[in-house]
Image 1 (cartoon, rainbow, N blue to C red):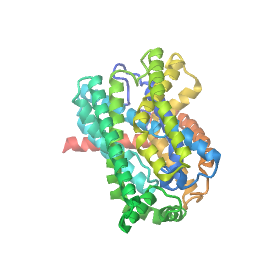
Image 2: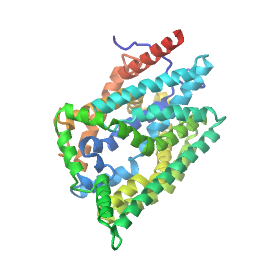
Image 3: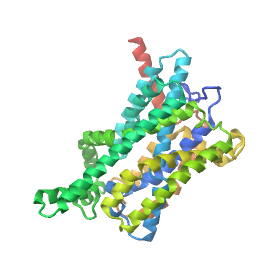
Image 4: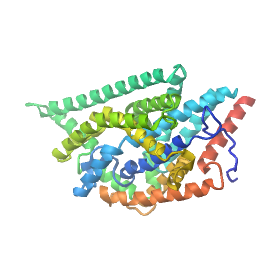
Length: 432
């Protein structure tokens, strides 16, 4: 059954008017394209290369420069923007459903249920770096918190509290790691302490570890062992992400919900206000991020230093940079004048954002087909810098097919399936 030319489910329209908002769709398009700059490392290299760049694929100056640019401008920022937009869409969906006399919480639950199903299938069949499952888990929590707050300011306070807790968690993690290493290096340390320290460094991405070798063998192999590995690792993957990823995602979702309520993310602010936010947040966060990047360089991309910088020490600055880059994008959009009269490129980016779920899953299918053994089998063969040659062609595919699809249908194929499942499940629950 082809997707209908008229959406069977309410679109993400403005809470103030019937026309769909352009700014969130364009931000979503930029986010799903930008996420590939971060995810390409996870597609093409062992997963530990993400938090320990020296683990694999760091062969020369170009690779180090590629890591630095990604660390400063992309890593965590596009993921944060995507989470903000998901949160904004959730709160808008709930409020619209309630205004229409529908059971908004029932819709939110079924929406999260089916997104979680998509995410688990994505994880099992395609790629270990799925975020959809985490959005499904975290989204309902964020919605419950935001729904109890009366205005945007209270939601921002809740977001700030979550971020503070998350930063403290990361601080505690690093202090624990440093304590284990200090114990192992102390005079007269017992052999067990040394073994524990060595295993911990291997888990963080120490070059030459057995885990890295096993990953390369696995992902260059056929589909069945990869599926079996993902299935066996599923419970650990979920528990680790609930602890290490979901708190940050929750903070960004709440931030996006507050930004929807105060019209920041809708593109309705004055251009000067967007510029002021961008200038203030970037000027606060970018200098310390540069210092952290220099620390990694000066250490020779040491495993512990890299892990600490990427996973913990950059966290508060990453949050501010995410806000600043979002404001900068909105400032650029506002500079085009009338949103609907913008350049063809902006309209294509908007189309990418309107079918972001389809584009996200398509990207995983294409990239795993390139890197995994059931496809071309390029896993671990390209350096970090070489990986980025694959990004512009994938962007071109997104920009071309998204606009072409929306010239014929109102929503993307996966968006249509998602909404059909939501509507079918909701109707079944109501009949029951």
